[in-house]
Image 1 (cartoon, rainbow, N blue to C red):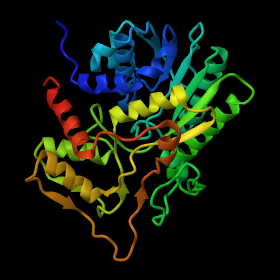
Image 2: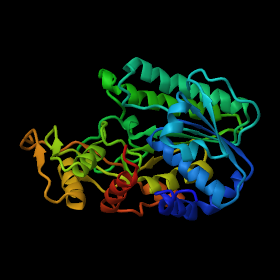
Image 3: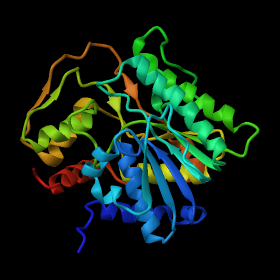
Length: 348
């Protein structure tokens, strides 16, 4: 008997909430970039589960730079008969033959330790251009780009939540702007390629997330805190703990992303995230309360008196109004499920 997927309950929930969307995927081919990272694993998990549960007879070609590594990481996905891998660089991969119905363009890791900012910018912009050229050549009907809240630049502290109409932009005098500006160009390319063609391009501006597959040792505060708590270590905050963030659980994120792909109007961007803000200090306390109540929380810097905290919090009113989307899993439960998934993994 095959082992039970520890994400089974989440995947059943995702499929149940998106069941009506998948009919147009029946018998169709999908192309997915970025299919082997944090977001990508959830994309493949939810795609394969819906395909299997609803007997869609759909398939997905997944672009990756390291299919062998992914086979070791997630053999149940790599061995699914609906999945095939295409090894290549998103900027230059050879177009697979035949027609495809949908593309999910989720490639680009903003935190790669092995790439320069120029290389990552080139991957975002030229990778998107190459994917769009493929989409046109393969007669793709619908494409969703996973963009980022970074396209708005620094959120003014007096702006409680950033709406899609917010007119800010990255500071082009800062080298750190490469990611947000690259995503802005990627969005523009999508809109240009959709003009005068049958290709419908939709944009999901992603913020911050929690859930299984989230790295516990990277540049994600919530992942680092969960890792600390599981190891019974102090939860360490290198700053002053005041910046405000919000976190959407990945099962909800997948419902939102598939809904945007299938239902959103073309040339439309939606924020994808939670609008429930809390400080990094409060986040550390929430993780400790759920997983390790006795854990020490160390804040290395003192807040500057009178300075308003930095914010990175979206408005999700547009997604609610136009697509009926809302978060369903609260933060404590998201923390608990993420930790339980890691506990369920076989130990080496």
